[in-house]
Amino acid sequence: MVAEDPQVNAISVAPGVVDTNMQEDIRTKFGANMTPESLQRFIDFHKNKELLPPEVPANLLVNLAVKGWGKNLNGGYHRIGEEALKEFQ
Image 1 (cartoon, rainbow, N blue to C red):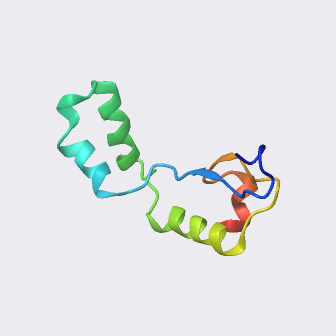
Image 2 (tube, one colour):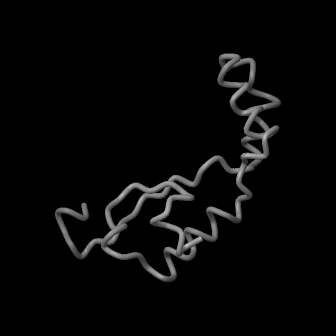
Image 3 (cartoon, rainbow, N blue to C red):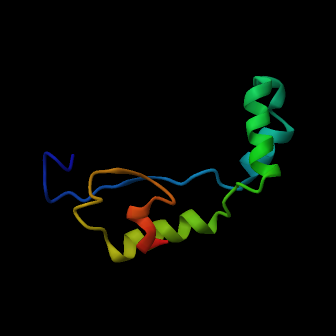
């Protein structure tokens, strides 16, 4: 879209693994429907405290919306925590 119309501002941000009720449900309710390796991955995220509080990606997205982003980010796919997004975290 951005390549076709330079007036369009668009960005995609992967929020990371966020500590939500869904994460708990995956670990406690839906494990029987997963491979043991996949379930263990989600258990390890929790055990190793690798889940982000929801406020972390929320603040980043709010800052992007309020401040806007430059052409260097426009039209791109980005992951939370990457250097290019530091000013918005």
